[in-house]
Image (tube, helix red, strand yellow):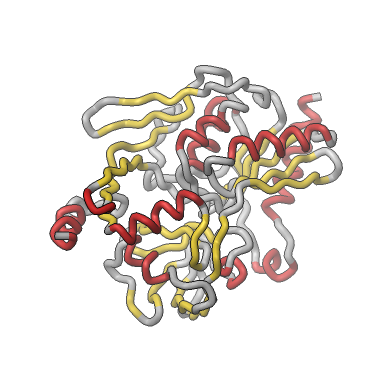
Amino acid sequence: VYGAIRGLVDAYNDPNTVFFTPEESKKFNDDIRGNFSGIGAEIGIRDGKLLIIAPLKDTPAEKAGLMPGDHILQIDGEITNGITIEDAVQKIRGETGTNVTLTVIRDGWDSSKNFEITRANIKVPNVEWQMIDSNIIHLRLFGFTGRSVIDFQQAMVAGLSDGGDGLILDLRGNPGGLLDVSVRIAGFFLERGQVVVTEKFTSGDDIVLRATGNGALKNFPTVILIDGGSASASEILAGALRVHNGTIIIGEKSFGKGTVQELNDLSNDSTIKITIANWLLPDGTLIEGNGLEPDITIEMTDEDFELGTDSQLNKAVEVLKKEITRNK
């Protein structure tokens, strides 16, 4: 029966419309809660290729050197052609302390490389912030989970109390998460009622999601950092702030994941996740397959990785300082 259902679902030829067995449903719910055992990387399928969307902070995937855009050719020697995301997750996940080997090819490489990675218990962080040059708040948002809004608010209050005059909102490697969390965080920057995102359904119906916050940061100097690991809710937040506030986006083109899935519970704890709509930015831009082009493109160099420098962040500081001066 499971095989018949999976075949029916696969006939839609949509990598985001999937059937979950009870075991796979449990893993999916663990992801949402942000606590699971694996290597700590968001993966996706683009043009039939299994890709790393983003390695999560302080996880085995990040420490091993995996990067957004890496193409996974094999998992423990098994070729990934035609694999589903769910099958890939099942193969990559495993008990803490065990190893998995990913064969990866990266743009610019002449040949593939093997990454042997030891699985660990993964706890997805929410927010991390620091003060740069005594007045610039550098806030990294790692995902959009149930705690992200309060963690974001607390970090901003602390940063402002410490004398922050501007914000670098760092969405690099942020694979997304809960849509309503993205909309609520956008509410700190937008006027109440402004459109954050539109869900466009195949039926022709649209659902418009609007900012409901206090807009406290609307006029606060802000720049945004993105890269190929910024996806889904990250793209919604960054796109909405650019459309309405003219917020400058720096870094590399985002992933381009902009579809809406509905989760339907079946008997025996199995589920079906079905794509039902596309996300449109306030200016009508389709996110799916397009992504966001930065206003200022800065690519991380080999020197950055070797020396531990961050040319994207440095550029963001430079641009933000000009914004702060202009705002005074």
